[in-house]
Every structure is written in structure tokens, then in C-alpha cells.
Image 1 (spheres, rainbow, N blue to C red):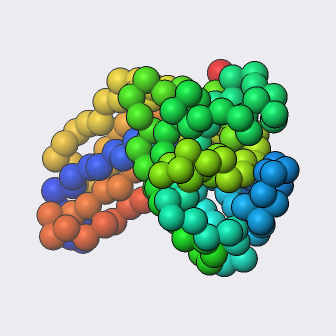
Image 2: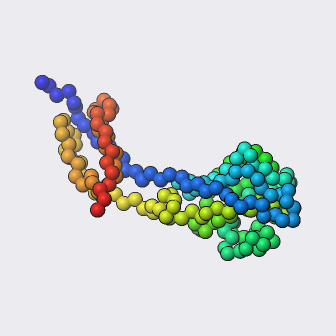
Image 3: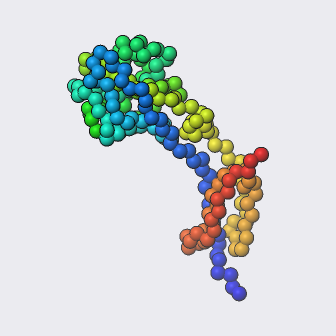
Length: 204
């Protein structure tokens, strides 16, 4: 019987899959002077795999309207709630998400600024920049290497893998595949995938 499978090409796709990490913001209601400024509704912060952070304000989000109320991610750096309430935003270790609306669903995604250690940031801070007026703040559990896979893998090391013969008709050999996590895809000369297998790295 004549072999119909022609020259084979191989494709090894190595990947490190990291999921996003998300934290709910809690303990709003810190403006004891003007309570209408306090935040209500669901707020969360998501650390993305592309070195960005997303602030999510849910549809039930609400606060008093203001001329220039902005959201920030802040490293409180040991400051008490009272100290934070009396701090100017420029005196805090922060980066800005953007100008917010007083109610409704809103999403802001920003790049983590160079030199900022995201594992140190623990507070979502709302502030009226135009009048240097404190609005409210809430707390998040800081992202860290143990709880967030985005931060847990610094480098992906690929061990040398050998594939032969290439081209081939009936059989190919892949050496040292156990040392890597990989997707193995084999295509014929017409571009049709004729084989697929996912391999997980063998644990020592």
C-alpha cells in the first residue's frame, strides 16, 4: 500500500500560561468629614499578564460628584488611616488610573510605571486633584509571588529538544521532551494537522 502521508513538518509550541490575578477592594468609608464622598459598590483591581493593572468599578459604584475626582493605586507604606486621610496625593507613592464618573460601571487599564513594585501597593485611593481634596480609600491584599501566578514565574527555561528525522514519512523521534511543557503539532505538506499532543513537564 502506497504511503499517502508526505513530508512532515513539526511545530513545538512552548508556553507558560499565567492567569490574571484579581483582588476585591474593601473597607471603604474612610472620609469622616464629608461622608457623601465615601465610595459604595463593588470595586476590584486586576493584575494582568502584560504588566498592566485594571481598576474595575461595577455598575453599583457610586460616590458624590466632583470636578476632578481621580482613582489611584497607592502604597500606604505603613501610614495609618488618619495619616492617609490627611495626605496630599503627590506625597504618596502612587500611580493614577484616571478620571472617574460619580456612578456606574467603569474600567481603567494602565501600565505599571517603571520602577514601581506592584507587590507593595495595597490601597485604592480616590482624590479630587483640582482641589487637593481627599475623597475615600479602600484596601486590597497586595499581589505577591505566592498567590499570583503572574508574578510567580520570572523566566521560562526551555531545555534542548531534538527532533529527527525531518523530513519524515512514517515516524519521527523527539528527544528530551519530558524536560519541557509543550504542544506537539505535526502538519503534512498540505498544511493539514495530522497529529497533536500536549506534554507537561516531567516533575523531578
